[in-house]
Amino acid sequence: MPVIEIKDVSKLYGFGDATTLALDEVDLVIEEGEFVAIMGPSGCGKSTLMNLIGLLDRPTHGDYHLNGRKVSRLRPNHAAKIRRDTIGFIFQSFNLLPKLTALENVALPLTYKNISLTKRLKMASNILERVGMKDREYYLPSQLSGGQVQCAAIARALVNNPKLIIADEPTGNLDSTGSRLVMELLSEVHRMGNTILFVTHNPELTRYATRVVYMHDGTIVQDEQTAIGQVASTAKKALYKTAPTSEEDDLAGVSALMKAVPSTPSKRTSKPTAKKNRKPNKTTKKAKAKR
Image 1 (cartoon, rainbow, N blue to C red):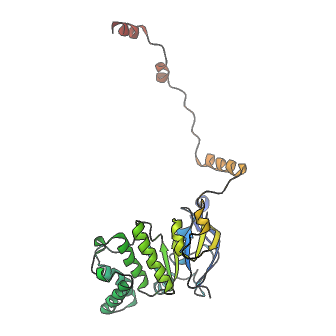
Image 2 (cartoon, rainbow, N blue to C red; image 1 turned 90 degrees about the vertical axis):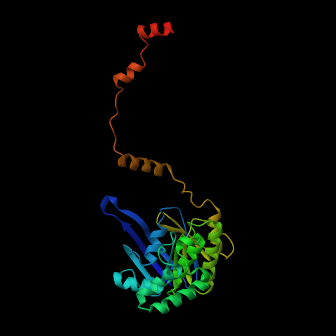
Image 3 (spheres, one colour; image 1 turned 45 degrees about the vertical axis):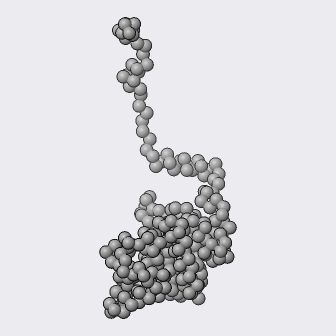
């Protein structure tokens, strides 16, 4: 049974003439144990798709099944419970609370499970040890490097033992060393049997994925199985170039632009401007002659 099964999912924002189509009848099936990279240009719908999969949002149309259960129309409190028990989130901006230690940040999600404080801290400490942060558990986020902060965020995502991990550009704020550290850690988490989806703009990170999904204008345009350790073939090409357009498409775009931008009446050249182009008068000539 697939972990994720999305069928004809669309997501619209706004009303009337201001409606924006973020996702356009997307179909996606992800099996248990896959390591999937989601790629595409900015504004193509990657984050919207991740929000729907993570039960942070609901589709306007279509069906979404998570672990065989239809979740596209769940009430908010039911969706929150499934999200807590099934999904772990890793964010680009880390989202650790600055006044809590790494240990306290990792233990925080367990608070909503009514687990005692002692047990929460013990579970958090065990997870931090798994990600190589045991000796940093009492450090504040400000005392850690970017890669270490993201490792703590990964530990927080793992503390509930989720079946699915969603990482939205987990290396976006990191240097090359921190990026390598985080991706190696995610790769280790994947080898332990977790299903991972991560959004990235970096083709080099597809080396860690078993599958790469490419999006453009709210749709999935390509779905490629890849070998771990190799950059996906499509990622090597000019991935973010827009598709070639015909003359009709260009004219339609110009027409839409003219409707969007109101025309303004042309202003005639004012008289003071015209004076600047006149020949110098006699007084000016005399002043120049004295010089």
